[in-house]
Amino acid sequence: MTEQLNAVDPPAIRVHDVTREFRRGRTSLTRPVPVVHALRGVSLEVARGQRFGIVGESGCGKSTLLRIIAGLDRPTTGSVQVEGVEISHLPERRLGFLRAQLQLVFQDPMSSLDPRMRVRDIIAEPLVAQGHRDNRTRVHELLEAVGMQPDAAERYPHQFSGGQRQRISIARALAPDPRILVADEPVSALDVSVRAQVLNLLAELVERLSLTLVFVSHDLSVVRYVCDTVAVMSRGEIVETGPIARVYDTPEHPYTRQLIAAAPRLRAALAGRTAAVLAAETLAAQGGSRPTSTAAPAVPLPPSSPKDTR
Ligand SMILES: Nc1ncnc2c1ncn2[C@@H]1O[C@H](COP(=O)(O)OP(=O)(O)OP(=O)(O)O)[C@@H](O)[C@H]1O
Ligand SMILES: [Mg+2]
Image 1 (cartoon, rainbow, N blue to C red):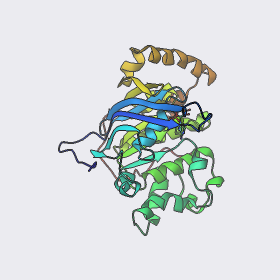
Image 2: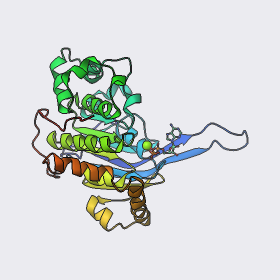
Image 3: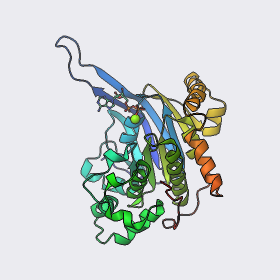
């Protein structure tokens, strides 16, 4: 039996020596089938309440790793435990507990939200899957938590802006009251100014609900804003990991140094204003401050959140 509960308090996520190989279609009868080594022996641990960032160049394996952690894909070899339960070889039908504990937010809310469904049903979907019947109050609570009006429940995804759609995705992810939120480039597809608001919202909700966060982004400044720990990936491997200030200020691995050296160019490309800078400015304008790394006690969904100004 692969499923096991650790006796002592396990970390939220433990990944040990995970590989993932993808076999491409055969291109020749004489040559072997090409294999992509998307992950090559990845190990990491995410403590409860930690905000764990994953950075690295395009194609280095970030999304593959997240999908495996979320049980949407299986490793070729290695072990993945969520809340102490080994999930790497569990069949889909036994992953119900994972759906309740861990939820995902993707990059592109348009393709992750069903255009034919009303917002009410989109948000309630994970609740219905868990057998909850009357979800009206909960849906309104969740909409409020992400800074949207209750009447949004009756509308369809295409009637909202990109930022609003990502708020809806976040509301849906929070619906089953998960302990872990996994986000794959959640603000990368958004307009820079909206990016800041959504980033603030995520940071605030993670803080208030004492969530464990795994956050993937190619934007180092965004990761610095929301995370306390970072893992740097290159070509399917984690080359460096540690507290974010230490890794960014005194990078040890040459690849990390290279990535950080490239970051000012990225900032220049955004006219000197990164999402993180904008997020800090927006928050300062609201009279708030950046969430601290000390987790707040678990509370019901917050009565107020940064309002959507779009
Ligand atoms: N289903 C698949 N079939 C074949 N190859 C795949 C598949 N999924 C991912 N890959 C390959 O695995 C490698 C890692 O891809 P992955 O999407 O995890 O990278 P990423 O770090 O998320 O990149 P990006 O920053 O562009 O999102 C890439 O070479 C990719 O082409
Ligand atoms: Mg990706």
